Image (tube, rainbow, N blue to C red):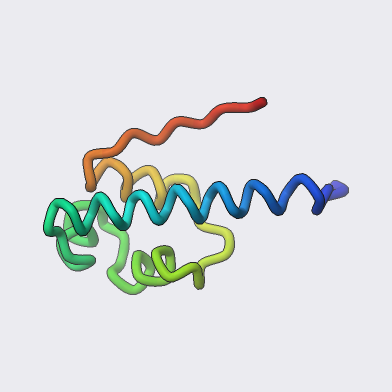
Amino acid sequence: LKIDHEHATPFAFELRAFIRQLKAAREAKGLTLADVAEQTGVTKETLCRLETGKMHNPQFATIARFAVAVGKKLRIAAE
């Protein structure tokens, strides 16, 4: 499998932007990382690494659970 880094990099920026939206939604609802961890079954440490950008390749299920916990829908589109 050959990875086209020119096109992969914009995806990473899109993912980071989406995660910032999830964090903002979490904060707007007054939820702590512990609250979201309890709702999702994802550890608080994992959620923290996700929000701070220290998790470079998060699992789709992790992001989806986070989105649901903060009242957002995850939508994927190909262009």
